[in-house]
Image 1 (tube, rainbow, N blue to C red):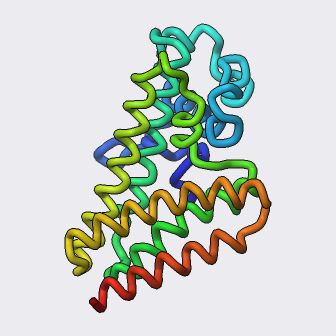
Image 2: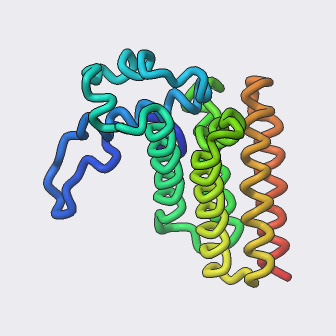
Length: 209
């Protein structure tokens, strides 16, 4: 399940009472923008390319996003943030090492699911946003903080001391972001798997400390 960056036609498609609801045009455009961001960055996420990728009607763009491209990018970044949080919220892992493995697996699938064409959409916004786009930077900063806090909370819930949980969550996030960049460029997973193994060993050692 790609939960970090790739378009998911089932995202937010269900009514709260379990009745299937087809994705709205707005939801489709947000998911499409997230996928383009991950693959091409902000410069490659134009309205024309989004229309081609999603099949959305041209007149719907400013109807759904009156703030233009910046509003769409902000919503796509929040979408990416929510999807990772949803993946971290999946029940199952019960030790810090299991949680770290779950976290790194989510990022690994970004690479394998896109044949190394995609990276982190949120990171792409952080890199590409200009000095006059502080609102976008704030959105990305908030997403990164939410990811750190969510992982730290789960690590602490699995028995790791609070300070160690916070440190490992930060180290895991920055390690995965860096690993995506390096492995996307090299088009292989060797270094990613080495970093993931190191993070898991830190979780094991922290759990037994």
